[in-house]
Length: 94
Image (cartoon, rainbow, N blue to C red; front, side, top):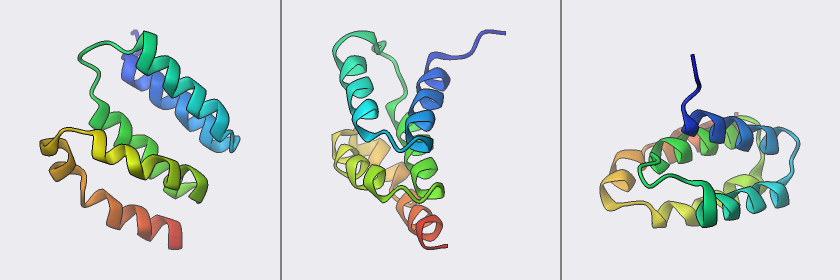
């Protein structure tokens, strides 16, 4: 069974988080935004998975990098995801 494109993207971001390679993640994101990302990519799902993984791994630099990106999501997605920050803070401080 073939993996969904968003799951491949999430795995790639998780590998950057685990190796603490913020510059690599930033370059990967730039490439996605410029070339690779399909129009219907569920950015809210990708954001949630990547953000919580950064919190779980206690990578504050990634959390700080991801927070401003939240504002670029659609209003409905932001409303649906806003409770994620409380859980992320819990994971960071655990």
